[in-house]
Image (cartoon, rainbow, N blue to C red; front, side, top):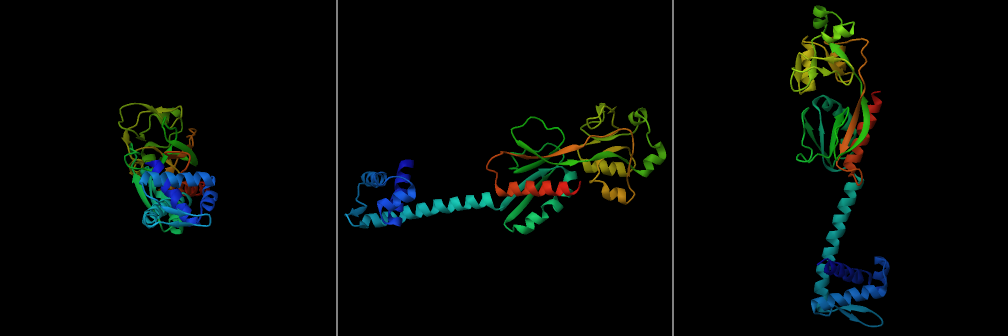
Length: 291
C-alpha cells in the first residue's frame, strides 16, 4: 500500500511539473526512476495513464480521472505537513499545564504576554498539589519543585523559589519568636504532607520537626498560618501580599531554608511544539524578573 501511495505521488508530480525530468529534479531522483514508478503504477492499475512521445506527455482519459484523486491526495498531505510545521513554529492550539495551587497565581503574569501575542493559543490549567496523572490529563508541561523522583519526563530548570519561615502576629504574641533550634523543634508546625503523625525534616534542612497540622495544599497551609495556628515554610513570592497587609511576618532565624529549584517537565526533549517552547521561555523570563 505504501509503495502504491508513493507511485501515485510521483505520478502527480510528473503532471504538475510537465515531464519526467522536471519531476525527477523536484523529487531529487533520476528520470529513469520516475519513469519506472509511473510504469509500475500503470501495471498495478492495468490501465495506461500517459501518452508518451519524444516531445511531450499527455494524459489518457483514464489518467486524467486518476490524476484528480492523486493530486488531491498530495494536496492533503501537503496541507497536513503545513499544519504540523505551523504547530512547530507558531504557538497555537491547546496548551495543557499542570501545577500546584500556590504556583497558579504566578502563571497569569507569566503567560499573559504569550496569550496576547498568539490568539490561536488556548490554555488549560490542571491545578492540584497532589499527584497528577500527567498522561491521563494529556499534560504538555508540568511545573514541579525541589528534588524530582525518577521519571521518563524530561526536566528543565526554569527558576528558583525562595522560601522562609512565616507566622501570624497572633501566634508570635502567644508563643514568642523561636530563637534556638530547640525552640523551633517545639513550635507548632504547619507542613505539607498526608498526616501529622510522623516527625520529618524541614524542607531538606537538618532540623526534624513533628507538624501539628498537615495538608496536601500549600494555599491551605498559608491560610492556617495566617489564622495563627503555627509556623509554616512558605514561598516569599506567594505570601508577599499577606506580609504587606500585616497578616504574616517573616522570621529571621538561624535556620536557613534551601532554595527550591523550579522545573518544567515535558514528555520529550526533541521536537517540542512551539506552544511548549514558548511557554517555557515565558515562565523562565518571568521567574528571572522576580529575582
